[in-house]
Image (cartoon, rainbow, N blue to C red):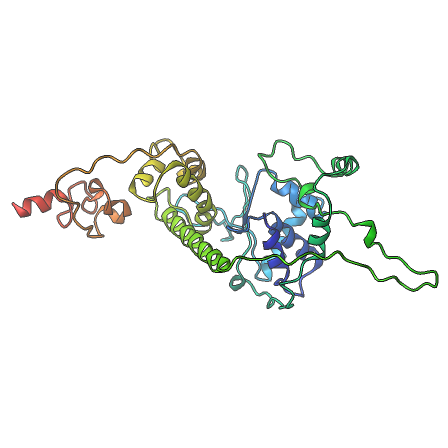
Length: 345
C-alpha cells in the first residue's frame, strides 16, 4: 500500500518545494493504493496528521493549497449529481464538506511539473533496509512487541486499515553491523552478510508485463463503464477510476459482467435517492450473485441500435425497452424490433 508509489513520487517532486510540502505529499503517497493511486478512509486525516506532525487539518489544508499553486494537485474535487465537479459561489472547486470524506490522488508524471527521475544504475543491488529485515529471524522478541505497543497509536475499529506503527516497521540493526575501531583508533571495516542472487525463471518478466497490461485494460474498461452509467448515476473520471478496482473485484467474485444486466442491477430502485451517485460505491460493494444465464430464446436478434433514440442512453444498445423516440415513449421507427417486424411484413 503506497510504498512503491511514495518512492516514485519522492524521485519526481520539484526541488524548490518546502520541506512541509514534501512531507505532506509523500505521506499521502504512502497511504495511497499503488494500483489506483487514490487514498481515502474514515481515519485518513488522523493518520495524515500523525505522519506529518502538523497540529490540525487547517495547517495541512494550507500546505495542500501551496502544492496546488505549484501545479501539484493532490485533492480530488467532489462530484455533483451530474458527475461534474462541484464549485462554490466564487467558482472554486469544492474538495470537502460536511458528511463527505476527503479523497486524494497521486497524479501521473505528465500531470504535474516534476523532475526527471534519476537513473542510479543500481536496480540489481539489494537495499540495506531489505538486507537488515531479511537477516533477522521471523519471530519477534517480547521486548520489540512491548516497544511497538507503547509507541504506536491505536487505530482500533478502523475497518482493517493499516497501523502507522506497522507501516514504519523495519528490521533492527544487527550488533555485528555496529561501527567499531581498533586500539589505534582506526575504523574496522564492516562486514555485510552476502546472499545468493535470486534466480528468475526464463520468460517470467514478459509474463508479468502482460499481466500488468491486462490489469490496466480491465481498469480502463471498468472506468468507462462507470462513466457511461445512465444519469444520475454516471460519475466523473476521477471518481470512476477510484471505484474501478472495487468493481472488478466484486464482479469477479459474484459472476457479473460489464453489460446491461449489471447496469440494471446497480441502478435499480432509485426512487427516494437524492444523490444516487453518492451510494454507487455501496451498491457495488453489496452486489449479490449474478443470476444464472437463461436459455437463449429462439427468434430474431435485436436490430442494431441507431444511436439516437432513448435520449442517447447507452443501455438502448442492449435493451429494446430503451429504444424510444426523442421526448416520447413511442418505439423508435429506425431500430425498435416492433417497427422492424412491421416493415418486414
